[in-house]
Length: 67
Image (cartoon, rainbow, N blue to C red; front, side, top):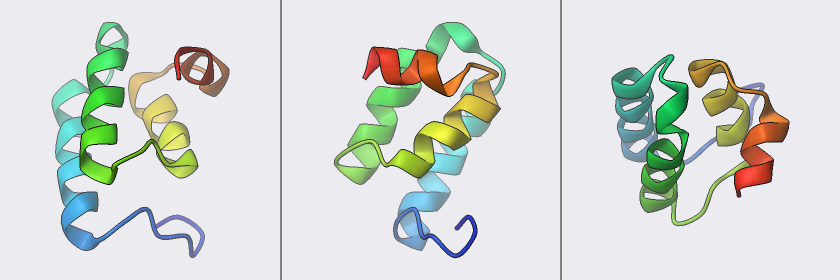
């Protein structure tokens, strides 16, 4: 949850956090992280883009250019 906005269920969030931890700081794995994120939530939530951006140290605009 970020500023009162829920990303998904507790189970989904835990799985998402696990993916981020596994690939943290690993820019070259952005596609893998995005694919796993979509697999977890069924789509790529806007809030997840911000979180992925911070975790992988990639500008949000670069992620939006991919998706």
